[in-house]
Every structure is written in C-alpha cells, then in structure tokens.
Length: 159
Length: 280
Image 1 (cartoon, rainbow over the protein chains, first blue to last red):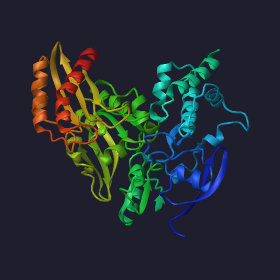
Image 2: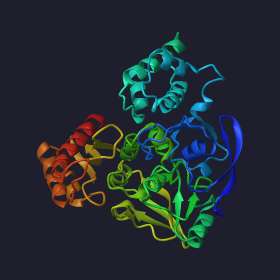
Image 3: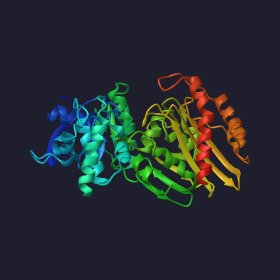
Image 4: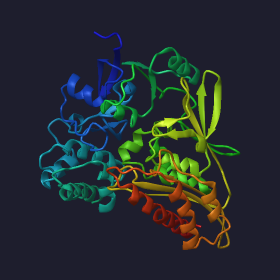
C-alpha cells in the first residue's frame, strides 16, 4: 500500500466516515468506489456535464473536480442523502410526476442542483430555473419536463 | 499522491521547495480537470484552503485586494467592484456555470493561464497586479507581464499566487467583459475586457484586452490610445480593432477558425463600447 495515503474523516449524508484516501482521489471516486454509492455519475470527468453534482456545505459542486482530502470538516450531500428514507424529496416527487427523466444518467445531478437552487430561490422564474440548470447536461434533451418539475415545486412552495 | 494542507504562506512555500513536483490546488476546477485528463500527475498536492490571509476581498486606499483563494462566485456577487474594477466582476459572472463558480478560485484560474479564460483579460483591462509569494517573500507582477504563453506564467519555481491587487482607476470609469461562446458556459471563442471613462461624450480613458486570439491576452497601448480622447465613433473603434487584429495570432480550433476570431475582434469591441455607453 502506498504510504501517501492518509486517514481522513468525511461527513457524507450526515454520517461521519473514516476513509483511507490518496491525495489525488476525487469525491466522485470516493463515493462510488469506496462507498459503493453509485447515484453520482461519472460523465465527462471534466466538470462540464454536471452528472456528478453533489452539495458541499449546501452548495452544488462537481464531485469529479473536488478532492476528497480537501473536504474533511465539510458537509457532503449526495443523491443518496436527498430522500428521507422512502419519502422522496419534493423535487424528486416532481421529477417522477412530470416525467423529468428519461435514461436517468443526468437525474441525480439535476436533483441536487435544483435542491440547492430552490432552497435559495423558492420562487424562481422559469428563466432563472433554466439558468440554474445551465451546467447540467441532459443528452436525452428532456429539459422541458425537468423545468416543469422545478416550477411545480416552486409553485407548491409559494402556494 | 501526497496531500498537504499548510496553514501559512511560509509553510506552503516550504512544502513546494521540499517536495519534488508539487502543485498547489485550491478549488480543483482546473488542476483536477487536468489530472483527470491525464495531462498532469503531480506527486504532491498542496491544498491551500487553510492558508490564512489569502481568501476574500478587502478594500484599501489603492483599490481592492483579492485573495487568491477567493471563488468566482464570491467575486461575481461582490458589490466592491466599483468604477472600472467592475470589469473583473463582469468576467466572474460569465465563467462556466454556478457549480464551477462555487469551486474555482481567481488564483487558480490565472495560474492556469488558459488564454481563453475570462480573468486574465479582465485583470489586464483593470491594470491589476499579481502578488506571488516565495522563499524570498513577496513580489508584485503587473498583469501585463504575468502571462507568458499558453499555460505559462511568470510565477517561478516554489512560488505561488497569493493575491490580486486592483487599482481603483479613474473614478468615473466603467468596465465590461463580453465574449462569444459556442454554448453557454464554454470557454470563449474570443473575449474582450474593456475599461472606459467618459468626459461628456468624449472618451477620457480606455484600456482594452482581448482573449483567445493569441498565446497570451492581447493588450496594446496603441489601441488604447486610439480610443482615448476620441468620440468612440464606429470608425475610432474599427481603427483600434485593426491594430489589435494585426497584433493577434489566433489559432484554428474547435471553437472557431483563426479568421473567424479575427473577425470577432471589432464586433466584440463595438459591443463592449455600446454596453458601456449605456452604463456611463
């Protein structure tokens, strides 16, 4: 085993987890390969596509560009931490209801981006939602229904 | 790959000097992307997030000091970028997408020195200086002399960028950053950063920097001089742009041909001037 690895504690989805990490390991590699949480997807691995989006201290970041070692004492949320047990979150519900997913590859990133966005902007315009999603690519091009889902949640909030 | 998190500038410099092939990392938006593409594989990473005194924007007599670890999002949302310094704020707002702006830092972005990035031209238009720290303390490098080539800067071995100093500039100046991209959030095909000041309808100050048309951001005193003391007519702008086109050395790549890039220079300059005339 390489001596370059260090034991680091990460807080993922509310749980403190001790991990042996290489300095170059990304959050995406840690959650998928060490923890077996495969909801976060590896798309471009360059920070472009948004399929690996996670929340770090509540803000959306790219899991493929974030070094795990640099995330100790920060709070990490992956798609696995968004639902409350079997109860889906409002945006997850709305995605199901509005058919906001086709192949599903981009979905976890979309849900995390929208969760953070709607928490900060509970009453957005459609244009603001589209802008918020500008960094998440859906190659099925199902954007319209994803935006519908987000607007549905926003309208439910403001009702 | 080893990973260190020093807490002071001196400690960070000592690690850079001690370890072979060590690289500083802040948000990871550029360095980790390069590692993922197998373009870089440093043996040691020096994480800068705990280094004190290199994060955040502070106002002083001369203007602003932007810590190297300040994220694009913080700069984009800051209200401190008044007068011509606004060019930096405008550039920050146009970098990639919100999640990247939450991660990427200004120090990391300029250290990467991609000629298609947004901060390099903005810092030149704002006449900023880059503070780098090393074994012998700190030195200031004018933004004009910082970018040496594709992905190449004046930062020496065992040094790293610790801050960006932005002078206030003329009080009545305004700044704008415009770019053409293939799709939202992409690197620029061509970008223009511009700071102008007006005296009545006359331009009293101009500083233009053009991105992605050469190995380094393009800035010509002669082009600035054409706009200064002019009425900023289309002819004045075309004359300034002609000098920039002549000095440019663009490449053909996926974002556009060299000819297309040359054609964009006068158009973007006109767009920037017209936006600033509305602001002023």
